[in-house]
Image 1 (cartoon, rainbow over the protein chains, first blue to last red):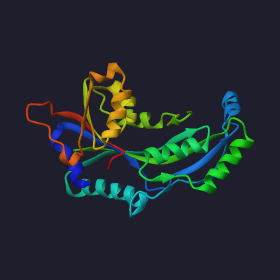
Image 2: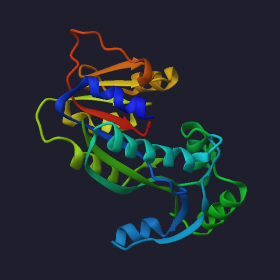
Image 3: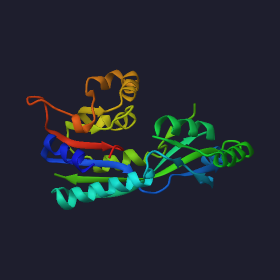
Image 4: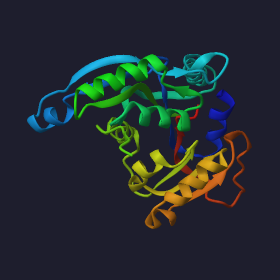
Length: 149
Length: 102
């Protein structure tokens, strides 16, 4: 990872920067937001029910290990390879759909080896069925870092 | 299909805050995938070289790229470890963007 990061230096202007976005080493959670449409129309916050976590089995160390390794690579680039940390922030990234099946299909297609387990799907479906206009969300915490060469 | 990605725009807001405030930005994006993020920040850049090691993802990117962006975005199939930019090409980028790829 550090090698890949260092390779970018050769193509950067002296006053350029590297910006990295990668998920934080936290489990992505799954929520159902009930009364979503009504709440939006009324300018209210929807009720949020956490129904589970994304099951991600993308490598031997697990996704959290992979994301932690990315953190370590950035730390090493700064400590040993002359990069300077200019700024760092954290934000929430939501993947939202009207059904748990849509979210699950997207995760299976776009994430490396992720899915919603049966229990999470069942809980989400029950809430969506009982609450017209409800939405299903996966929420990831993402780190963004800006480094100078 | 009702999928919505980052409906609150937290990602692009964070990226905009970190991008240099400069006209004519040249961006090297590593791990562009299907171009989801590229399309979101492309209005900030004059030129983008977007690379990814997945041919299917790049095919999806090409198939969905708006014509007005095609003039400014060059796609290459390559992992960063194998990327070569020949001398004489425009190699001075303002930003190297690791797009969920580290």
